Length: 459
Image (cartoon, rainbow, N blue to C red; front, side, top):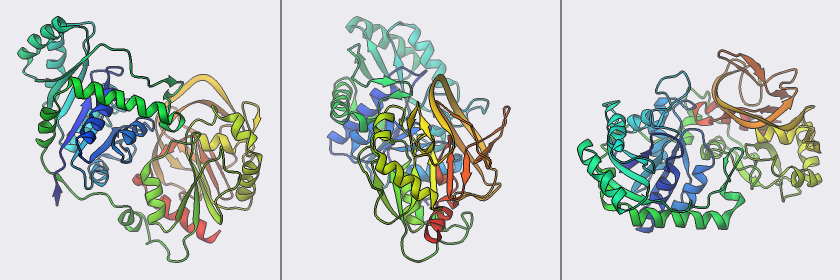
């Protein structure tokens, strides 16, 4: 079985070259033409997909060959691209930058090869002219399996500058598919972990996406880019399916029939970090998924028999989260009763006794605070003991991205043992609670969704 979805991968020689502006603007520009656009992001990033979703009206999805394994990149792509006319994939870092010490694994180039997709290279041309040809030639020829189908020149100063760049690139044999002038940066404010999420600045984010779309529509050859996307050949294999995943032999026995347990999933501005596949897997495993906002809702969803609290920015909203005492007490009561709770990063902080001196839920006897140190990177982890998510010995890959610390870093029963040059244990397992700094992609181990829902049904 194979499927053919026109597709492009938007890459760059390095971070800061303009990938997000071009990719998001291109998504919005194609959508404005009436096309159903499938948005994707290489790597574990949660924030860019929010802008992609605004641009396209569809859920932004991640393609991460480290978290999910190379074998799932194609199926997850096809799952997201169902019914779409074209797909745009925003890369991560520089084209050939992957997981540290793992060669090409999880790089934009790796994902482009797995998708058999042409690459559009976004080049910051602000400080060069003829040298751009050497740069593009090097990236285009480095790996023969990566097809650089065109270049978009960013931050071009003038007509004369553009002329010099085009003359140089004529010799490199890579067509110029767009030229973006040096203009005031589109308003996409950042803070300690990157761009501010869409959920925190909805109106301003809509304006920013519109500005990106206008810039790309004016400066890029959309027809040529669409033709390049259509040159991508058929992608073998079937689309990923949540119901098949939770029922597969790898995941264990099929989901147990019976009344659907209500699984409350934290959302709102403080908890924006989640992969769409998590809720899809929970539903496929038999749960009724209900979202709530810990900033505004004073009660958990009625009948909640499970709780999932993903990542986000609780440190930014610590005062508001702390002030919502009724919900904090409800969470503590639910967890204290042994109801399954799965918390990642921000969720871990929310379950602590305090965050930056402000009372949190007190489910964990631990204290959290902001620091100046950034903890960032992929992790190879194994479940230390049995929990509501995983049996002892279950191996999952995760990603850490935070400027906070929790003391102690693990409980009497840790959640994960992290392998590698600096092995450690981290996280907390107690009664029905599994709390950890690690962001994980449940599509890589769908059995965790089935196990969690089963525990919700029987707790």
